Structures are given as C-alpha cells and as structure tokens.
Amino acid sequence: MMVNRGALDAVVRGQVLRESEYSVLTLLLAPANRAVRYCAHARRAAPPRQLLVLAAGASTSQLDAQCLAWQLALSEVVFWPVYMHDIGSDAASGRAALASALRSVLRLQKGGVASKLKKLVYVVIMDYDAEEASREQISAAFIQGMERVFLSALGTAQAARDDALPRLSDRFAFQFSFLPHARFQADAYADALDDLSARFTDPTSDHYVFAASGAARQDKLYESVTPLGELAAHAESIAKALNAGAVPADLAAAGRGEGRAAAPDAKSQPPAGELELAYKIERCFVDTCDQFDSKVQQWRIEVEAGRIIGSFGPQGSSLLKDVLASFEQECKELISVTASSGMSGLAAPPSAAIHALIAGKTDELKNKISLALHAMYTRQLLRLREVAYEVFQQRLQLLQVTERVEKDVRSITRETLQFFTDKATELKVAGISTQWSFDCDKKELMRSMREDGTEKIQAARVQGDFAPPPRQPIAMSFHYLQTAPFGWTDSRYETLTSSGSMRYAGGDDSTLDAVRVRAAAEKDAAAKLPKSGNLVFYEPTPAR
Image (cartoon, rainbow, N blue to C red; front, side, top):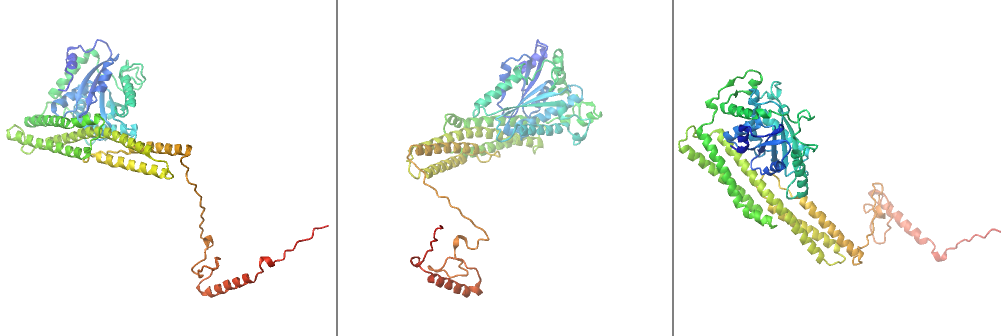
C-alpha cells in the first residue's frame, strides 16, 4: 500500500502527537506527478500545528484504491498538486483514481463510520501560465471536474435533484495556489513557493491553513474530524469497515433511508485473474516509463547543456509512436499469457474493466511523454531565441551605414524572424493533442530586434553618417461632382491632341460637332486679342 508506514504505525500505537492540536493531511499525487517536494518543503519547516502526512498515489489497483479511501476518510486536508495542462483530463489530474475512493468514503459517511464534516482540498496548480488562462478559469474548470466526479460517486442519475443526497460544497472546500514554471520563471516561482510554505508553516500568515480551533476560523474552510485520543481507534474502525464492506450497498438508497449494512457480495469482487492481470499491466506501465526515461536521458543532458537537438521534432514523434505501440503490444501479450496460464476468473475476451485500465494507462503514458518532451522543447526554444538574437546582433554590427540602411535593417530583421519561425516549427513533436506554441518567444524576439535596429539608425543619424531622404507629401482629392479632376480633358467627348485645349466641355455624342465649333471659335477669338506690346494702360491723374 502506498501509505507512509511509519505514520500508520504511529497512528495505531497512539504515538502520533503529544500536543492537543493536530491535522491529518493526505498528499494526493496524480499520475507521474513529481510535486512531492512542495509538501516536503512545508514539512521541513516543522509547523506549530502537528501534521500527520499520508502519501497517496493515484493507482487503479483495488488495494491502492481501498488505501486511498482510508486516507481520504481519515484526513482533514487533501494536498493535491496538479499540472495546469492536466486540468481537463480526469486520468492525468488524478480525479479518475479519486472517484472510487470517494464513493467508498461517501458510503462510510452514510453508514456512520466516517465523519460528514467538511474537508479542505488544497489544490496547487503547477507550471501555471497566465497568458493561457486566468486563475478563475483554472479554478472553475477544476471544480467543475470535481462536481462530475462527485456525482459519479453518488451512483445515481437523480443525484443532482435529490435533496437527501450530499453536495460537493457540503463535504469539501477548495483553495488554490498557482506556481509558475520553476525553471523559466525562477523568481516568480520562488515567491509563490514561499507563500505556499507560509500557508502551512507560519501561524501569523493571513492565509494560514491550520488554525488553532474551529471557533477561530471565521471562514470554516474545514473542521476538525476526530479528537486526538480517538484517532487511533477511528483509523482502525475505518480500516475494518473497508475490509469487511460494512457500508450501505447503494448510496442513493442510504440517503433515503432505504439502505442496510450488507455483507460484501462475492460477485462484485473482481476475479483473481483480473487482479493479477491489472497488477502486471501496472508493472508494464512503470517499466515502459523507465525505458522512455532512459531513451531521452541523453536528450536531457544535451538540453541542460544549452544545445539544440536538430531532429528533435521528427525523432520525438517517432519515439512517442514507438513507446505507445510497444506498451499496447506488451499489454496484449500479457492478456494472452495470463489467459493461457489458466488463471481462474479471467474471461477469454478481456472484460471492460481491463480495456478501460489499458486505455487509461495509455493516456497517462502519453501525457507523461508529452510533458517530458514539452519541457525539453521549451528549453530548446529559449536557446533558439538566444541564438537567433545573437546572429541578428552580429549582422547588425557588420552592416555598413549607407542611404539604404533602413531597408537593410528591415531585411535582416525579417530574415532572422523567418529563421526562428522555421526552426521552432521543426522542433515541434507531432501526434500530441496539446498545442505547442512559440508566439510569445517570437514576439519577444521581434521586440528586441526592433529596439536594436532603431538604436542603430538613430546612432547613425546623430553621428551624421545617415540622413533620411526628404519626402514630399502628396494631396489628392476625388469627388463624384468633380467631373474633370486635375483639369483633364474628357476623352469621351473631345478629341485629344497635343495642341488642344485642356478645358472640359460637357456634352454627349449628338453635340460633339457643336463642341468642336465652339472650341475653334474660342481659338480664333484668342488669336485676335492684342499683344502685350500694343496694349495702352490708362493711368489716372492724381487729384488736386
């Protein structure tokens, strides 16, 4: 069982705590979750309110599900780290594994074995990116998924409309903390981690989780479940109830007072062959993850050293496809070997539970590979941006200042941006549903290049090496009432010649001759006018 055996033994022996104030905290780890260090960071600080920490792994085996139900029923606080990109997936976030345990806990509560008081679910969103989604959207999406799991645990279609059945808000309160990426946002990550640690270790913090008493907590996020003196007996009674199955068989019937404590039905228990096969599939999943880690170990070394893997995209796509195909093939071989061994209770065609287990593990494996490859992709993307910027700066320094310096700077900027876009696209791994985007890095690179290009041109102008050519403004006007714009002759009605008049004369085809006659008359009249040398100017005599 994935229980802290030392903590469990301490509970049974009654040696958990010596002080009157304590809390039981369950650390729920989603599949392939590496967030243990967050809770461990809080535990090292030795908070004044003593903690019994139970580490729960999200597993699909019956034994681990029963263990998780025991921890969930016993704990006051559930510490739940989840990656931001796993919020929408029940399997990757751990909600799918929680459903079975939650169903058992609700049945224990209906049977009076476990307390019905509210528990606090403290969710830590890791690798949070504010540009992709707001905190409110992430919180709402997670709670919506928990609502779906809670209704599924109730086991009835009328759960949403049955007043006798509990609601999610009656049994759980939610708090969220958001941690940015530890490597790419190191400063913000350190600040957020310090705040998270203070919530669990500093009683003077405004958001301290473990208050001295329930009366001092105005918000009542959670309530103390069991007195310290009764903790060992309470933990033992929950374990016995889970082992004996002494809980109502139907939660909806129990909510309406129709349920009775019933002995476990042998038909409801999975056959021994299916349990053995589920264990082998679990081991196969772990071995496949280890094989993948060994294959990408050299990539991790190269990326950590600041190098870019040229064929990362194609090789990553091929590796993803091969690992998934290998896992599915090994699962088929396990089914065949287990069936041929004559294991009791294993049907010739695998049951729906086995198919669901394989599908869930396949999705979990794909998410694990996607997260590992995406972490290396972001590191290479950052290095690619640095390389592109360095190349741009080198070309900018070698650029000679001429009258075409502005066009040359724009050309270098455009070529560098195209280089970054092409290489970043080649680094993408195909076959992953999550969209890998490099728009933010592209915008940051463009901003830096524009600043340097503008500085280069301004420095040349200040030194007198470059003067932008003068530009004459042009004013143009068009209007439907302006029949002859710019004084042009209308070619539809007048003959265009080099010596013709540029004046516009309106008319249609029937008056074309009249127009020509009038133009000839105007030309003759202009010829008869006296020249400037023959004109007599009248000068008035000044008045006396």
